[in-house]
Image (tube, rainbow, N blue to C red):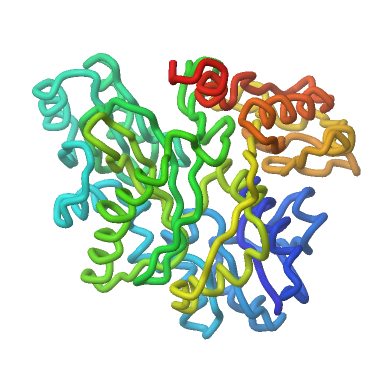
Length: 428
């Protein structure tokens, strides 16, 4: 079959790498792609915001199946446009993608379906939001309601930080995404990511991971789109998974179906494992980045039938198999990230890194006069496996150290919680 992937980041490189290995694939394109994706798929210069152009390309090239990577095209209704044209697509409708496109929508769904989450209120002006924050006290969480590229959330440890975050939203720091703000309870515990493939009625568990949001070692500095991840997450036990499926995922699917927006695609639950049990922090309606990279590395077998089963309502027949090892990815970012990343710096040594046994997924890269250069904030995802998190971590950093990129940096402690568990037998 002919498949088109939408996107250009590390997540899409991981998807292209996995999909390209399927015996079902005759031709694979990616729009717009990147130099790493070009090793596995033909990159085409399509504007992902131009739905008509994507539909026209798909028809002209007899594309059988489109896999949408990023959140913005989903929220904008690309899956709807493709479905209306009779083209099979992996990804939710715009109505279902509101689970990511509006944090307030998701919190309201949680309240209606009795899904465990933090207490919250929604606001369209700063004075009322600040009054609620003052009444609740710090620490407290301030979120821009809409899509903000992973940067619209502030965990405020003081009221002054909360007020500054509220002002930033309403003063346009996140564009239209900050026109409404959700102020919610600060949840204590360990944060975990959990993924399910969904077909509108059935949810198939699809692995756990832990991301590292802060830019600096020891979880310091500002939030980012993610500086590294590992999978599976040891804290996410089979018992917790069963509880999450029962108390969070199942009522979400029921609630969306009741709203006339059945959810198809990948449901990415950001969870806090609190002393009172798992609670939902937020939903994303696509694979995480960089969590996708470790999930694709661990997945044993063909991804394409699973994605097709999700799109065609056949997940009850599907089974995901996993390799018995840990995967860990380290994000290499450009100097200045997450504020103003420096573009155009030369990257060398990818072959040396992969000669160690690791896989380097490209995120923000470009070719300039035949030379690989940085072209974004998060630029490379250096991914390795091991029998333990400690082994996977050591293998990933061996590969990182083989890359010659003076204009880049990375955290040196990805996987630290699990490594400490393995070392000392308990969480720090």
